Length: 130
Image 1 (cartoon, rainbow, N blue to C red):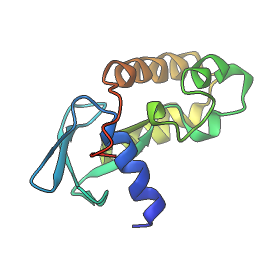
Image 2 (image 1 turned 90 degrees about the vertical axis):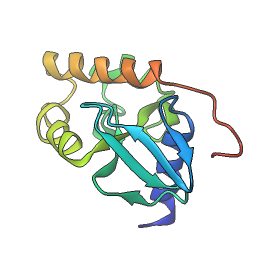
Image 3 (image 1 turned 45 degrees about the vertical axis):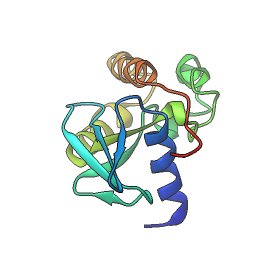
Image 4 (image 1 turned 60 degrees about the horizontal axis):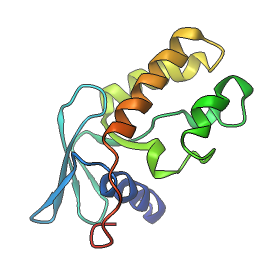
């Protein structure tokens, strides 16, 4: 896995109040289904853990998504927009809501709800963990 991707995993984990670092592994829950997921302390995903961009990267710069992207500082890699999700949930979101785009009312609602969950799980990063 590329070092840049590992850093994004660690950025998501260090700012997620549900993520705990124990014995060289992060343990957290999928943003969608709450399945337990694990990531090594160096950012290497284990099992089904994937990096989730809550507001899809393709939505940035689109007027219809401006209210959502503003919540993550108009930066697709802002820690508020990063979460850990299981592969099946992340893939399902990608082929359904993400693909419909910000002009689809249902997609906007679902992405908005996921972003609120992520923001509710927010914690300031601990320098030791980031």
